[in-house]
Every structure is written in structure tokens, then in C-alpha cells.
View 1 (cartoon, helix red, strand yellow):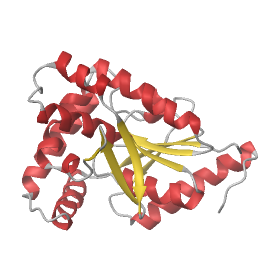
View 2 (cartoon, rainbow, N blue to C red; view 1 turned 120 degrees about the vertical axis):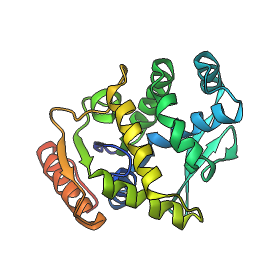
View 3 (cartoon, helix red, strand yellow; view 1 turned 90 degrees about the horizontal axis):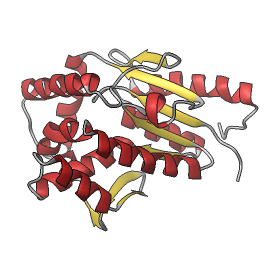
Length: 232
């Protein structure tokens, strides 16, 4: 198995992490891991079991859970205990509570272990989340930190809801994002923060294609230094 790069893409909700990471993984022929989907799956599980206020119960559910990330026609399929929950984990309820669940230290520790196992098995991985470059893979070859204005991020999320057949008031989405930012950035364990050696990219006024180009440029520079062959 040929050696590949570990690429970490972090940033707040709506900054373009998932879309960019998927496109970059496809270009490179690398494994793509959406760590946020894993936290969403546990949040969905907690909601289904009415366990949101019981951290020990959430941890128990997480320990017993089986999470698989698969791809079908380039779409991410999230399997939770052999059930496809890809649509369910994108609900407004999960959006509202995912930061509360993901700030539970024991849950983060458990999922970080799973994320490392997945990443270390591949011959190249693009992993996105909020603590990939700081905690999950602090020695990642490439670290990217995406940002965007709250208004831009809220508009992007509103469009996602609309495309999925739901309509949510942009103001409500903005409030939810602001609350998630506060929780994610201030939690004691693995807070959302830019790694000192990460390259920051503001995606507010650029297209997905443009941000992918910027990230690929950084990837190529590192690959050249490490003498690693890329498929592009």
C-alpha cells in the first residue's frame, strides 16, 4: 500500500468543510471521513432514546453503537447499528443538540479513537471536523482551517434545508450556528480552534471550486516536500 497524506480540515459549521473535503478526497483518490456525521449519529441515538440529559447513558449508547461511513454514488451514507440514518442526522433537532453531545469528554475520547483507527488504515485520508488538526491528528501532513461570516454560513445551511425539502427561518439557523460556535469554541475538551500551523482560508466570498483550488495548492506543496506522488 502506497503512502499517502493525512489532510485535516477544520472549521465551524457552514464554512464549507464537508463539500471541500469530499471533492478533495475524490480528486486524490483518498478516503474521506466526516467526523461530524459520527457525532450527529450519537446525537440522533440520544434523541431516540430520550437520553439527552443523561451523559452516562449517552456514553453507554456510544460505546454500544456501530457507526459505518459508506459511499453510494458519491453520497455519504451513515449507517448506525446497520440502519441508514443519513437523512435523520441532518434534522434541525440533531443540529440543535449535536454540540451539547459532542462536548462530552468521554464521548469525544471514544470517537477520536475510532477516527484515528479509520485514518491510520488508509493510504491517504481527508478528515474534516473541529479538532482534527489539534487533537485527532495533531501531526497531520496538511492542516486547513476554514472560516466564513455567520450570515454566509446561515444562508448556506438554509439552502441545504431547502434542497432536502425543509424550510427553516434563516434567523433561527443563524442563532443556532452562533450557539454552536460558542459551545464548540468554549468546551473544555477539544475546543474548536485553529492549530498554530494550520492554513486559514476565509470562504465568505469565494466559491467551492476556488477554496478547493486553494487547499489543493497547499496539498501539492506538502506532497512535493515529502516526495509523495499525487493522482492530480
